[in-house]
Image (cartoon, rainbow, N blue to C red; front, side):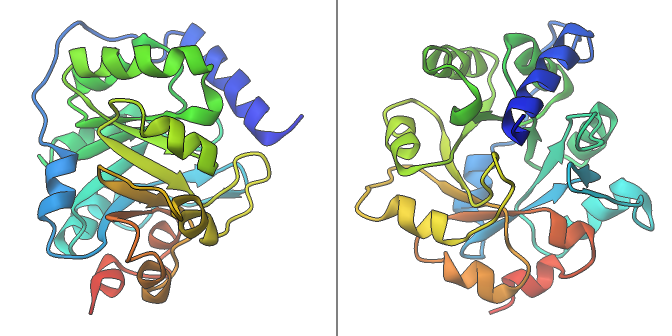
Length: 247
């Protein structure tokens, strides 16, 4: 079984367990799109709270996850991304709540397949949700975007190929993302961002996800990406946000 198929199956099991079941309440949230547009850094940095991955477990950082969130924001991140997938990434809704409490734009990053998960994001006050073209039936992409907008959430629509990017640009997603990590193999290549966008006119904020370990990596996609989402390198202490945004 490839990794992506396993992640999708697990996501369906987690939804069925009631993990995302919340309330009908909708909380106001600051705009991640605006934060990217207004960031003094180019590209802007979205710092991710990523407790683990299918390939690597991590210890809770000194000062806890909330301490990491505050540090990332103080160092210049325009917003936070929080993994909420509990089984492969050790994510938690508690971490999402802690991030939202800091009153800065927050992305709920998960394998979202159902409206129930978007309701959860809205009730907890996440600014935006991640939808992934490669894990959704094509017929579900637009309805989930529309549902997120009805719930007053922005959408980052992640693509894993040039064809998926072109499809994404035909939707009303607020942001489009290119994952430099192949979800089938988990291999990383920054040239995915550069290659997928070649000859394509992107009319909204473009976020490059994964593979950023130093300032040179960020600079490599600077002419294409409006923001870089950085998780592993920050969580492992290999680099700081300040180092990533330093001219």
